[in-house]
Image 1 (tube, rainbow, N blue to C red):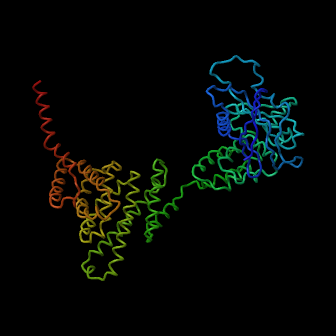
Image 2: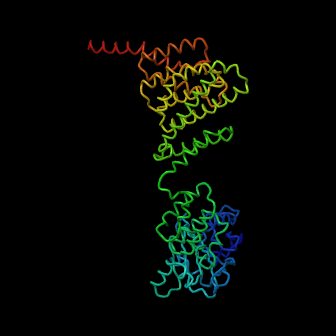
Image 3: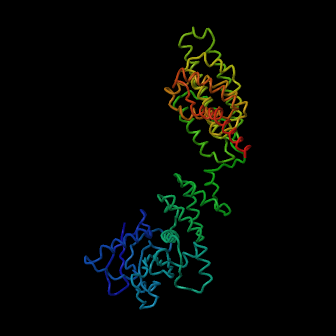
Length: 522
C-alpha cells in the first residue's frame, strides 16, 4: 500500500494529509475507493482538530501534490507508466472556477473535491488530459496519449474524431472511477488477460462493464477469457451469466461461458433424471444412500416454484418406481410371513428384513417427493388399495415393518396440510385399511424413529378423519377411543379431532335448532 499526499488549495493552509492508494501485485495503480478516501480524510480531519472547544474553519477543496510511480506493460512505443502532476494541475478543479469570494453560510460547509492525478506511458509525451468526475466530489485527472485511446476504444475514437484537436476531455457522473482508471491503464498493456490473473470475479465484471462502454474490445475479450476459465463461487454465477448473456448478439464468443450453466440440448434430460432415481433406489450403502436422498429431495424442493421442473415432467417415472417398490415389498412380506420362514436361520432371514427396510425407505422417499410437489393423489389411491399388504403387515416384527407405517403417516400429513386432494372414498379407504397398522406401530415409531414427528402426524390423521361424513367420523373415532383407553400414549392422541366431532354431533344441532326456533317466533 503506497501513499500520496493531499494538500489544501488555500495557500494559507499547507497542512499535508496522507491518503492510502491501492496498488495491485503487478504494480498497476488503482484509484482508491471513495469509502476509503473519505474515511481517511475524515479521520485525519478529526485528528487535526485543536484540543480546545473552538471548531476549525471549513477547509477548501483538496488537490493531489504527488502521485505514486507505477509500472505496467504498454505498447512497443511506451515506457512503464507513472503518475505526475503539472504546475497548472490545481486549475482543473471545478471548485476553483467558482466565485472567488462565495457568500458565507452559517453551519454549511462547501462540498470538498478530492482530486487525484495519474499518468500513463511517457508523461512528457502525453497529449491529452481526461478528467473523471465521480461521486462525492472525487475527481481523477489522467494524463494519457490520444493515439493509445483512439486505437483501443471506439468511444474515445468517436469523441476525438468529432472534435477539433483538444487538450482535455471531461467525463461527468462517472459511476466507477477506480475501474475506469484501471481499464484505461489496460490499454497500455500488451496482454490485458495476464493483468487480470488473481483478480476477483466481481472486479473483472466491473472492468468488463467499463470496457464494453468504452468499446475496448480487446479488454472485453480478455475479461471473457478470464470468466470462462476461472471458477465461480456462490452468487458470482448469477452475476456472471447476467453480465455476459446480453453479449451473445456480438461476436464475442460467449457461448463457451454460458455452456457452463446451460446445455445445447433442446429437450429436457429425461434419461439423466431416470438414471439418478434408479441409482439412489438401488444403492445398498447406508451413508451414501441417506445423504443422496436428502440432497436430491432438497434440490427438488428448491425448484418447487418452477412449473417445468423434472419432478413434474417425469412424474410417470416416479410412479413407475413406486409401483416397482410396492411389488417388491409385497413379495418380501409374503416371503417373511410364510410359515416356514420363522424356522429358518437368522443368516437367511436377515437379508430379507434388510431388503424390506430398503424398499420401504425407497417408497417413503418417493412419497415425500410426490407430496412436496402436490402430486401424491394417485399414490394415495394406489396405497389405499393394498388390502393384502395391510393384512400381512401384522405378521412381521414391528422392527422390520415400521417404515411401512411411516409411508401411511406421510400420506395423512399430506392430506391434513392440503398437499393433495384425494376423493372421499380414497380418504375413507386409506383410514379403513392403514390406520390400524399405523396404530399398532405407533409406540415403536415414537421411541425408535428419529424423523417421526408425533404432533404433525396426529394432526394429519385428525384432519383426515374430519373430512369424512359425520357418521364415518363417529365410527373411526369411537374405534380409536377404545384403543386409546387401553394403551394410552402408545396410540395416536386424536383428542382434538374428537372434540370437533363432539361439537358437531352434540352441540351444533341444538344451536341450529334454537336459532331456527327464534326465527320462527319472530
